[in-house]
Image (cartoon, rainbow, N blue to C red; front, side, top):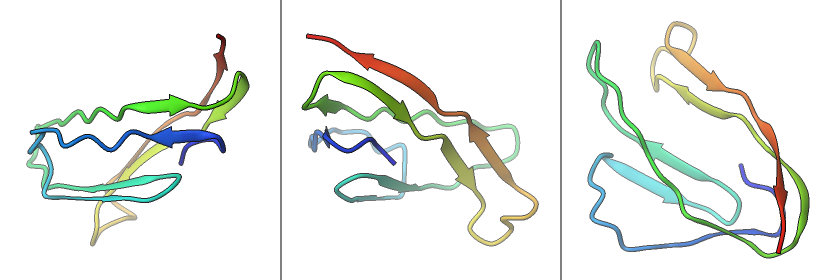
Length: 83
């Protein structure tokens, strides 16, 4: 979930590190398989339309079928957009 006034830059990247990606106005859902001991990284390009201080929401990752057993979250943070 991205702050209001921030735009997701929709690029036609060759990143095939996921199975499916659902891009909405203010968020991105990325679906992928992950084996034991494996990790994945995903990059998103954003355009901040306004200067100011914003709060970036936490990034979450959870299993489609076992949400109670497999879950991760990286805490949100404040970001400053300057000209």
